[in-house]
Amino acid sequence: MIEIKNLSFARGNSLILRNVSLLINSGDIMVIKGPNGKGKTTLLSNIVSFLEPIEGTVEYDGQKIDNEIASRKFLYIGENNFAFDNLSLKQNIDYWLSINNVTFSKEITKKSIQFLFDELNLDKKYYQLSFGQKKKLQLLLLMLVTKETWILDDPFNGLDVESISKILTLISKKRENNGTIVIATHQDLTIPDYKTFFLR
Amino acid sequence: MIINFFKLLINEFYLMLKGSVLSVTLFSLLLIASTIFSLALRHTSLGLEIPLAFLWIIIFFITIIKVEKVYQSDFSEAKLQQYILSPFALEIIIFLKNVMIYFNLMFFFIIFSPIILIILNIELSYLLQINALLSLSLLSIVFISSMTASLTISKNNKFSITSVLTLPLFIPLLIFSMAITEIIDFNGSNKIYLFFVAYFLLNLAFSPLLTSFALRKLSV
Image: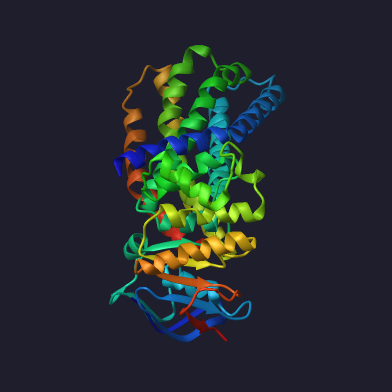
């Protein structure tokens, strides 16, 4: 359970979040919506403890979220690409799996890739991928890294309809397993019973 | 965890290989700078100290540029976010990257050093001592440069200027590096090497901690 209490955040002289309170239970899908510049990404960054609020707290199961809790509990996929342009896709996957301390058989990794991409030449360099393919490669971590909570910042940006549906399937399965998902997006989800929080 | 640590080490090695083009370019610039230096002062007897001081200063610049470029690309905001959430401490990732930068620079220095010594009119018989001294001092230079880089790549420009604060940390290295002439000329004690080992251990203790602190606070 994630509990945000009276959170305020400022960057320089501008107050971006003011007195935000929010409760996200285990097994919830929480969609954070709001116009551009209203602090959706900033709120996610505060949850994952990348940023420190000027006021208020963010707690996970009653404990203040610090780097240690964040690294154990959260899988964060931000809006920017984190892969290395000059490495091949295979090298990138190996690299980010080892960073996340994940060891999978080649078979499982291959099946996960097939689920998202159908067909993909892993010897290609990362920079040779399209915008949508790059996004999907990042979202591959959702299948390979096991963490209780997913924090996703605009995960559907640049994806085609079929890929969005695959990601929604993953999200539904995560919820079935009592996982928590927090998503910042402008898109309406085609999943039943998700909660929405508006930032105005 | 240990298996993945070694996998990470191998992956960092691949990354280091991919970044070798920059090192070759920087060492080529060192060759050009050495040539101009030697040509400009061809009628002056320089002894050993001045060409060595020149060499060391250029190596400082090469290292600072290399570390900053690596940090700019490898610690971009999105990557840094993943590193922070990694089960591996950010300090360990910083340590691995620094070690790989060190090996990369050292490898190219060993290749280029005979040519550089010839250009700078330093006897080739000193090659081993110079390489040994550089291999020790470069460790500290890389770790100090990583602190500098973590400040200069910060999002907030007003913190970039604070990177100047790390520059005095280079001074002891420069001073003691010049003591190599005593080892060579007077067959002095090799205890001078111990200073570099001690200084590196000091940097090893503080630099990854300070670098990771600066990256977490200023670049995310």
